[in-house]
Each structure stands twice: as C-alpha cells, then as structure tokens.
Image (cartoon, rainbow, N blue to C red):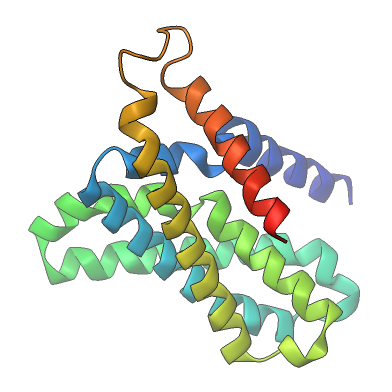
Length: 191
C-alpha cells in the first residue's frame, strides 16, 4: 500500500507542480491558432479514447481493488493509446508523424486527460446510471470541449498579457496564472 501512496504522490507532484495544472500545455496551444486546434483535437482524442478505456477498466476491476489498481490501469491505458496513436500516425505518413507527434507528446499525460478519467470514475461511482459506455464517451467529449474552451479563452488574452504594457516582471507565466485564476473564479461563480 505504501508503494501505491508513493506512486500517487509522485504523479500528483508531477502533474500539479511540474505541469502547472496542465497550464503549460494550454500556454503552448495559445501561442498560435494552429497549435490551439491541433492540441485541442489531440487532447479530445485522448479524453474520448481514455474514457472508453476507463469504462472497461471500471467494469472489469473488482470494487475492493478499485482504489489501488485504478491509477495503474488508467496510466497503462493512456500509455497504450499513446503508443497506438504514434504508431498509426507513423504508418499513415512519415511527414505527418514528424509534424504532429509533438501534440501527442504534449497531450498524452496532460492533467486534463487523467483528471477526466478520475472524474468520470467518481461520477459513475456516485450514480450507477452513468456506468455506460455512451456516458463515459460523452464525459470524455465534454472534457475535450472544455479544454478547447479554456484554450480559446487563454488565446484571447495571450497577446495582451504578453505585451509591453504589462510590467516585465509580471509578463508571461505570472500574468497568465492570475488571469486563469480570475477566469476560474468567474466560471465557478456560475455554478
């Protein structure tokens, strides 16, 4: 059990601290419209296919082992989807592979993808009517669309928050975090 707790702490530290709550991927997506579209589409693919995998994992793993094995199986399923997606892209076109693989690398273990799987799991645990493949796929699609919306909101402010009008010490990442905090509070207030 200590090994699982250590693994969870390690992944949480990586996801939360290193990846800045998935914001680094959104920053990359916000730098250009091409990056935004390709990153958002790739994350939506991962949330949808990951949600389908999560459905089968949740149906297969016995309830008494659910807490200890869910993280492991979710991580393995995303890893398998990652390898399959890269392999398919490589066999389709070497040129497309060279151009698009960075989006797959950025998206595979993004917090949006893993967070979606655990959110779906907790919703399905609380409400058994959501324990169906269409419900899981719908939640995966909603998460992907939510990421697209968040990236669009960030893109709208990206140039202004990185302009010369913003003090140099506050420009870039610090101003983006404050902006995202304000937007998050506004969205939370709508609940």
